[in-house]
Image (cartoon, one colour):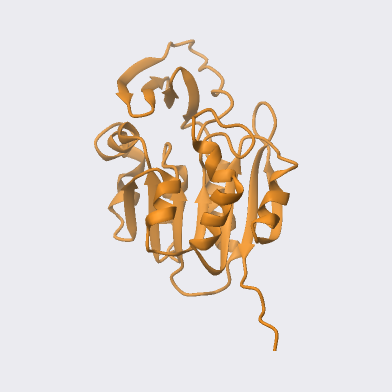
Amino acid sequence: MARMAPAPLPDDDSRPVVLDRRDGPFGEVVLRRHGELLQIIANGCFLMDTSDGRSERLLVTAALDALDDRPDPAVLIGGLGVGFSLEQAAAEPRWGRVTVVEREPAVIDWHRAGPLGARTAPALADPRTELVRADLLDHLRTASATYDALCLDIDNGPDWTVTSGNDGLYSPTGLATCRARLNPGGVLAVWSAQPSEDFPRKLRNAGFTDVRTREIPVARGVPDVLFLASHHLARQSA
């Protein structure tokens, strides 16, 4: 769920104000306010803020657009972050079930009873929404539910992770676990802070089809990238 750089500083040159600081199971996490923006910092590394969210929203929209017209599809969002993907899913009446998996307790608290709740309270109150505190890969390995779409926004993407263990999600075993949790015809959508020449091949090797990429320009630096891949059962020979 990390991002490459914070948004430009506000014109009034105000300094960030720490709203909460905690020692969590994966290190220190900080929520701070910078002008009108809320920012999440982990172990001194800027993760994300509330400045934009276009690519995080598109992650959910693109997954839904890639599905067929099945009724009440279920989506799993990996990583709560500042809530852009959750808000987008809850705003779309076609989704029948919205599951969000977040492993950091502080982030969940900031949404349930903290400043981020001003943005996401309606989405969290939606009866279709379930918020699960768990490591995403552990949840995918152990959950009995299946999904029509997996929308994953974990760390910086497949080629650059800043949190130990997150790279396992993008390994052959991790991708096979994702595929096993998808219903036939389901879609895997993966957010990345940078392009990856190798990841589409990894997706195909894991059994995904219709693999494609989409770039979203950002204010500074390289574009955000969405990887989309489908899960189709192999046709049985007669």
